[in-house]
Image (cartoon, rainbow, N blue to C red; front, side, top):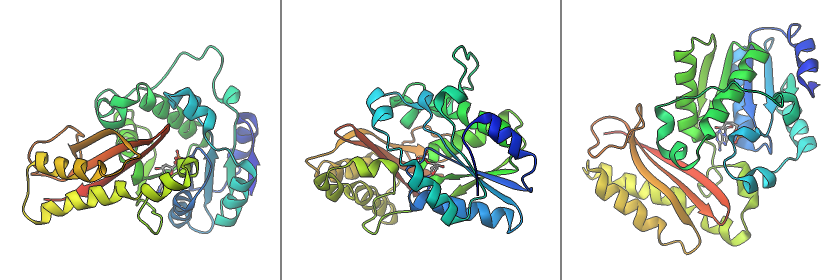
Length: 281
Ligand code: AMP
């Protein structure tokens, strides 16, 4: 496995890497969710193609200083995990490497990012689009794998690739969960034992509300009310948002007639967790 610690090292190596090349962009603190994406990349490129992973805690996508500062960065464990998962190339740049001090170009998405996480994290998706575009240019990858856990991010990246004619295939991968249903996240390690024990309530609340759909409910309001009622049983979490949106446009819907998403973001103190379920009428 080749490790490139800066852009010069990456550019020196990248032309010699066998194609096709599939990229898995991450911020590190790798867990089984990330490893599933790496395995999917291997499936996509086959035994002779290149599986590339980037590990970069992208400062411009953080809207809260504390979240950026406390983001876990276990680099040597991450490199060992990449190697064990069969990655061929890992890119681990420093922030100063990725952004010139006077950088002045960003990529913004202006519709899908106005809802959900975009509404509560100003500038977040512009930071994501900008870094992902830079990674696509650096790697010149044929494909890239993203988790459906961050479904708004996946939708926005697909839109960026469509609208800017970026020559890459975007592949979505199902959410990997802990045995108790909590979606795996690099931020889970920041939960106290009590918060960690409480956190599966997020998934349970969403699935319990989704059950109303199989009983024939099609109105968003009672489904949202059921989810909110469940979430409020927790004494520890604070709801950032709870929304029921169209699966394609991400706009809030009042009546479910097409595939929709019930999505939430919740805080345990400063730790923000997200999850969602699909609602298929
Ligand atoms: P992150 O390091 O959190 O920026 O995530 C890097 C990639 O891993 C993104 O495409 C995420 O959607 C994906 N990812 C994170 N957690 C999970 C999970 N539990 N299951 C599947 N994919 C995930």
